[in-house]
Image 1 (cartoon, rainbow over the protein chains, first blue to last red):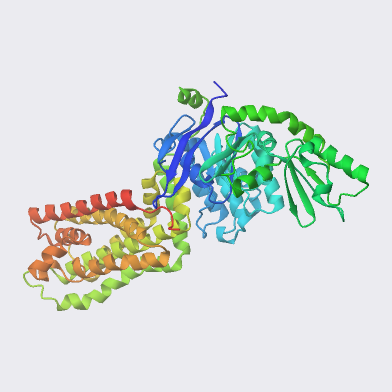
Image 2: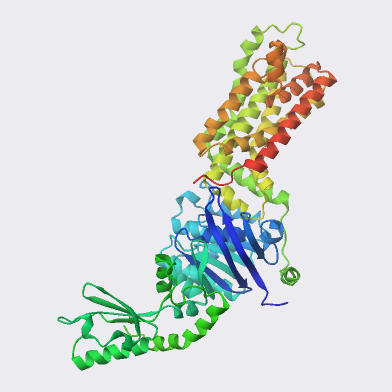
Length: 341
Length: 268
């Protein structure tokens, strides 16, 4: 048995909707056994469209998908008993109780867990007798998750599993997903909560307009982003009063009211230069915020404009991107140490 | 090949069978049907009450020479109403409701095949239709002196063809709607045409010839023809084969249409 064998293989995947809208435009990635892979993206980026193709719910317009070595669309019966999935919106008859819903689903699932086990996994035991229509949004999500886990799947697809959950429910779901992953379940997760991807994913990809804009481990993606320093200009001072920004390793800046924002790939050098200047001049930098590149930064930049393909944003997925990543790794470490706020 | 290695790691699981899956779905649908009062009432009581209203019409018909009696006019009609209301009309609502609640989409993510989903959901309605037909037959026999059928197999064949055909027609009809209410409207044309033109209210034997020829091609017509013919024993081999062929043609066409056009998700 080769544990490195990809469980999910997606090659140049395309999806075109009836009106000619191309929702997925050549997406490729692999997920290894036991790995948790997150697909991030703004609304309409193509996350769900991509995931539905991998789940075998629709036939791709182009490209190839393999799940556990099979085509999920044409070899549905080979794949389905081994996967579990949760759609973005659960579909359960509103007049059935939670318990009846689980029993119905169990009757359709190979090797189903006992009802009590499925409900206790997601903390719905006490709601077993309640009609689905009376559940809160969060409880419906958890019922959906219980059904996804019913057949002890080898591969789990979670489409925005924590949307609509409160903070506590979200934490519990994350804990459960971590546990499943620890037991060897392969997970493909879509989310628009960045902390969810950062906290759970082994690797992630950010989709934009049907293409993968960035992919890598959360650390790699984060390291590809410039770090930021922002502070309030002291009264009577102007940006021109600072040491030349080039000499600090600052690659860009903007002024919003009294607040100055600096972008840099060399956070330690820029911060040291700035703080030394402040010390020497005897001014206080109010609202000082020094932070290394973040996933949020990466996400917002991609969402804002992908045509502005500067820095390492562009082709992280390719071999060229790998080179860029190793180049940035050292800096990422530095900036973590420097993470004062 | 990756398939072989990955498959090798699959843990042994007890697998569910197609029958098991459909039974599970059918049980849930039965629960849902019992909780939906309006649908339940329409399915169970309308077909039991409607035939009574036909009695006076049937008694006024000029049946001399047609080989029919009041009983053999009403009984097949009653079975027709059962197929139309207990099976067709209620299933149109069921399919539309499950689609709008995204239940069909969710079911398709599991191990159920498409045909199993549609069949499983249809089971309770088909059973109700079947029980109703038996009750109606018994009632007609008891109340209207209907004698034992001349060719019972033809009647049974007609009933079975009807029970196979109407759920499929319901699935197509449901695809022409955007909501449960809309589905009831979408069901009206076929419901009305069938009631007027398929020999339920007016037997073909008493229709003008040209109209009868056209009406015999409607989906409910062969079902009524076979059931009525089975009872009266007045069908020639040619007529029998014609009716069976018409029924089979409708079933094949509808199955094809469902495969091609059935909508599993709401329009957004």
